[in-house]
Image 1 (spheres, rainbow, N blue to C red):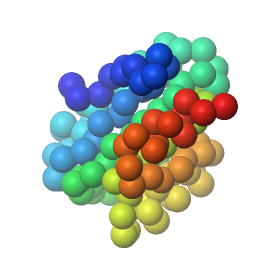
Image 2 (image 1 turned 45 degrees about the horizontal axis):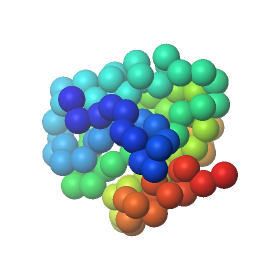
Image 3 (image 1 turned 45 degrees about the vertical axis):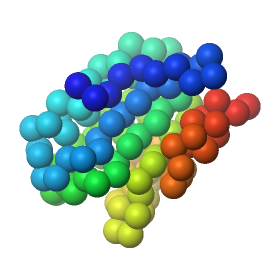
Image 4 (image 1 turned 90 degrees about the vertical axis):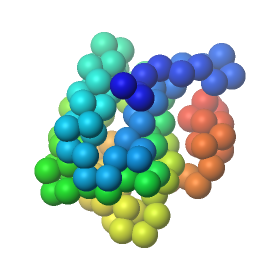
Length: 120
């Protein structure tokens, strides 16, 4: 698993690492399940979530799973930063956000995303 808890400037951030998956449904589904499991163990509105999607390509099945995941964990998540959203991925991110109600902000830089997550 690539996903899990990281510590940045003494704050815990849940890393959902969906990067480098090129139509690997099994691999990304395992990552999604792991992130769901970890997020659902936390209290409501407490998880700082960092999502990496760089160099990933998905299918309708993966998109559906990501939408369901966002809906499942939204009550536990306080903030979501997404790194690697380019082109059509920005449309997909908006679809997932609109479907699930999970608010997301896109970043080009990982450190900027982490700083935004831990701010205020």
